[in-house]
Length: 152
View 1 (cartoon, rainbow, N blue to C red):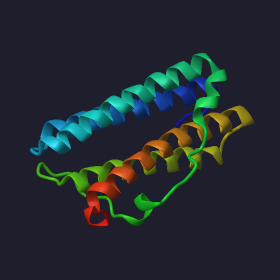
View 2: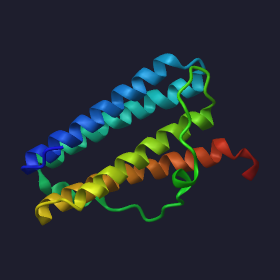
View 3: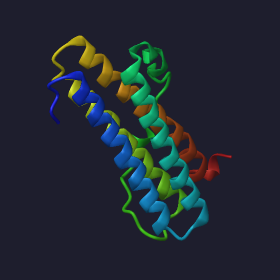
View 4: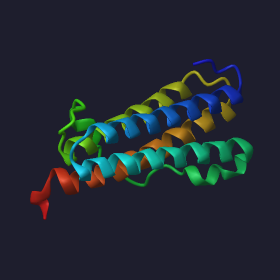
């Protein structure tokens, strides 16, 4: 990624969100299970929402308040293997795949903060990581509810 200026950071983040939306849309078209398909369609829409939020943030940095770090992190994603995409994957595998992708996105943004040239770049990257972490945590909650039904 070229981080010569703030515009490059926003362009990169938007491309990541658009790629994620396309990924989830493609997965939704491939899976047979209607519940899994719905999960992926919702995630594709969420990623489009992320892209709109990033675009709004680019135009109004005062929106930084929307990027608070999550208040908790169960680290379920970090303890799970990333499942392979299959056309007949279970809902728990679908959510596991999605939460791993969100974790990877957050990790990428956090790693990029190490090479940030100034505090404004670091703030943007940290805020983007926080957005991805919130999504990961939401998916972890769903994973625990679907993947570990014995807890109920």
